[in-house]
Length: 387
Length: 243
Image 1: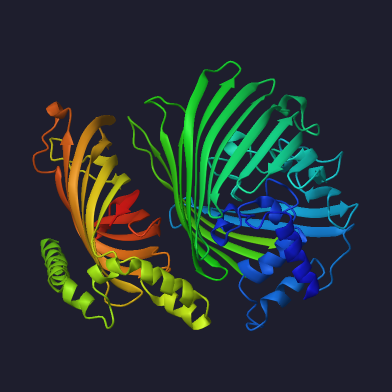
Image 2: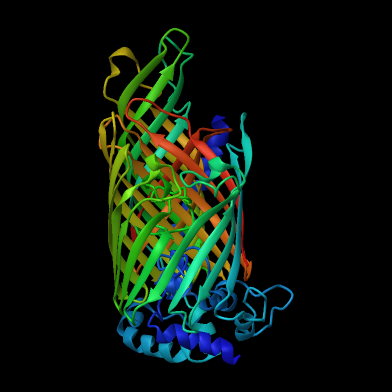
């Protein structure tokens, strides 16, 4: 019990009494990713505080112990259950599997099974306050092409997804150096969304970078020059930089602006985005990111377009949420360029700490000026283990 | 077919009439429900009471069960994206046309939610559509023809609404209704559309709305229109509601 309280106090003392891992968790009042993750931009390994929150507030109580105290659930949320590993050895495992069926019930329906994430995380720190340490994620990818644009290590089937040194300079500034995600826009778990993979923020688009993070009561600023992923082919190494600034109107309302510019030998990509994260008492949340994209590919016309990601997250009961998601994408501001939309409804369920289940129905549609294309439906089920 | 349409129209009309006539008495009959004026005058006091009530577990329970947003009447404005297969039956020399249509329209609507219980209620709405679209037609001789079209229409529906959370006012609804639609064509010289452009459709729809404030919410609807017994396509709408 004391340990759990210590972890809680530690989080509060760091000043992120309002923070968020999945951006939807602003509905609980958590607006900063660093509260629950070792990575300042979210994603990847959970820290002890994040694990405790997962068990004590986010996930449903395990069905075989419905009356267990939340504090007890928090205490037993470690990698080895109720046993907390020392600060110099914090392991974790993340597994994510997706079952995707295109056009269910129609001719030509295809079912595919994707093993999306097989990660082993390891964080090690020099001090108990975790102010200086190394965080790394090893990933089993199976086939080399599944790592693209990253590459497996040598002839192995393992890839380094991220590794960085994390240094808490003082109460306000943090520095991260190594291989990491780019700091841009709303980072939600669906890496295929219009505001992720299509603008080079996909599952394997990490880069070697230096990230300076400034955190205060109402302001969060990320400044990140990056140099491309040194493990990737030279042609795929994108050099550039990203900036993300968020202003917290209050603990449940965040406005943000973000920009990034990067170049490879083949293309130049510039993005700007405005974002809003809004949490409603009771765990509900609304996310929206509106962005522009300017792509110049060698030998092709320059394309200037826009996208919008909109998500409403309704908490039905502890651990179970209903989500409605709308995504718009216009590759170019021209009549000939279709307006692509992805409309979807689904459920997000955390039956207990460490387990996440998702079920979604998504319709993919292209509205064009001079032709009518057929809609496509996707039915998706997803399992995510966060051990 | 005509019989089925008539029966469906009568049912929709009867339920809508019932809803409009009996809305207020049903609502007002709830025990202990303060009048609108009283609610307005004592809002500050109520807020204080709520804050105090939250401090106890019984109080928290009471606050949760109280409807914070009463969508007695509200306006909707939104945007819709609408696809149909065999959406427009064109009576021309080439009667074997197969068509597929795509429309984008503005939606303006008015709705009434009649709270018979604390966490759900009967809902009735009317919507008007105005926008443009494309219809692609194909027959054995004439490959493809594309047209920019003006589309307008109206829809009335009735259904049941559930509140996800009384405190936030967010809600889900399942509704069914009938829709009248007229399609105007910008280049009609090759066709005779006088009869086919008007169409009566029946539909089922699912809606979720995220409450932003006491008086506004964002909504998303998925509608499946039918021309009995065939499904003709689907429509998505998203927009803002203001009470």
